[in-house]
Length: 315
Ligand code: ADP
Ligand code: MG
Image 1: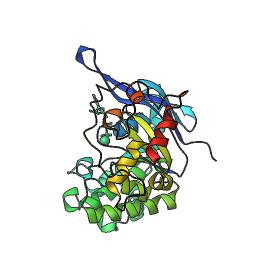
Image 2 (image 1 turned 135 degrees about the horizontal axis):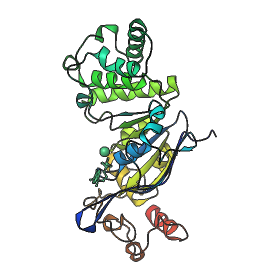
Image 3 (image 1 turned 30 degrees about the vertical axis):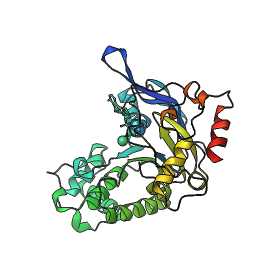
Image 4 (image 1 turned 180 degrees about the horizontal axis):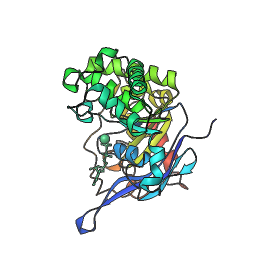
């Protein structure tokens, strides 16, 4: 297999609070993303997905761990050293309404990164913006429209056109369809799949919605309280999930439930990231909790705990 485009190693982001407590937003994440691949990050709200994306693109610095982009550790680079890399890594936000300046035409928004990077001549920019719009499925007649004249799905397409302007290698998409109507969501997901197969872009695709991830991703990493609890090819995770958290998540979204899947939906809420429970982080909500789970963490190497957990989960 090709070398990873992006590799996160032992990545952590801790936010100290007054009084000595610490929010462990991301707390030791290891994942790799290869060129052209689509990796999903799923998990309930607050588990650290957006923070992983912002770290991966070095919009914020990590507290610990390494971020390797094309094999180079970018975790400690200064803003000026990061600048040439910025065009390779683009972020698409959940809310396209907030991402576009209401006083700028579609042309002005999409042209901005081209102008900043000094693409020559107004005619060149105009032709390039028209081409970018066509790539996201919008006709030239949209060039002179303002955001208020666009639907949510059209705005998200404009945001994607702007992100594509500098021909990035990696697109991080943070809940890109969650703010859209259900009917529009399907169109945007289909478009994103088609864009990836045509462009060879890699996606770091964030969603709390497993069904969405199944449609768009090759692999998926399931996050819980700042850590990845299980990772694998999307179909393997969907048809044979092993971690009790993954199993509960899938049971909650996917009728019919795969054989042996728990009946009960996930009970309770995710604990506060400033009060991470001892032992296994999922233990307080786990339907198959064992005594040892509140003492040792099955995610740590060198114990048989994980094997025991997954065996009990599949029994
Ligand atoms: P997700 O995207 O999965 O919903 P986030 O990455 O946004 O999760 O947040 C993970 C955890 O980190 C949450 O508990 C959130 O409140 C906390 N958090 C995120 N950003 C900050 C910050 N700047 N300061 C303090 N806590 C933060
Ligand atoms: Mg988020």
